[in-house]
Image (tube, rainbow, N blue to C red; front, side, top):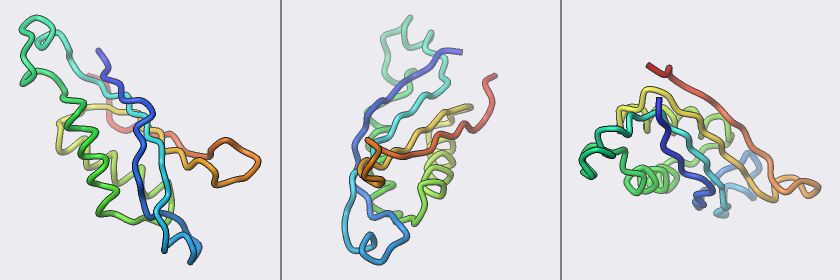
Length: 118
């Protein structure tokens, strides 16, 4: 199966478990790898047959504008579920990073895979 990639998408989010984190916006970095049959779009040059990565990126940004999770794990699960349903994505790998969360690390984060490649 082909893959559509979105790497390094920066979004602003209210996320965290500490009281002070609930009062500020923090930058998250999102990477997505999504299974998609790119052949129809490649043969036709028709956006309607492609997985529109601009629309997916907008959906990710809108998600974090509405949902204010405490945990990266919750953010990843909810976002993966929404994207799979909204865009009919059979399988995806999603990485959510929180730069600066641990002073000694460039970033911390999680990576999940949901669905199955058909």
